[in-house]
Image (cartoon, rainbow, N blue to C red; front, side):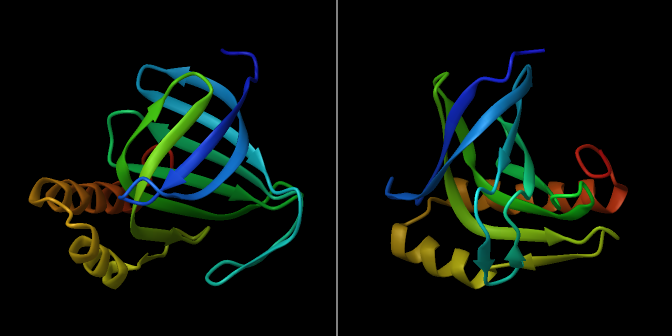
Length: 160
């Protein structure tokens, strides 16, 4: 177990432009898996998630060798709010900053494990705009299938 070390998470677009960043603490690192914890300092209005209350916690699962990450959102009282999954190029971690390229496609998973795949149109538009390689498109499609399999079978980190 690693002492909670504060780092920065940086989500970027395919051209390297920063999309967003936030502080997080490392909860543990096991091989290529990094588990982080972050907390919303203020209330946020999100297009799909609605109102996210200040104090909402996010346990974030990043694999340095996988094309996705998973966020487990908990309400300030601890109840599971939802899971949010991002398809992305495998992240890089330099000990201070964990950065990844967000490939637009997401999956929103409800506490009952029903789910919706989001932003496929945005992925297709950005594949043209940024010129995603065939390999990137293939890896993104594989990652989406793998995530759906993990959700439907409730394997780690779903149900964790």
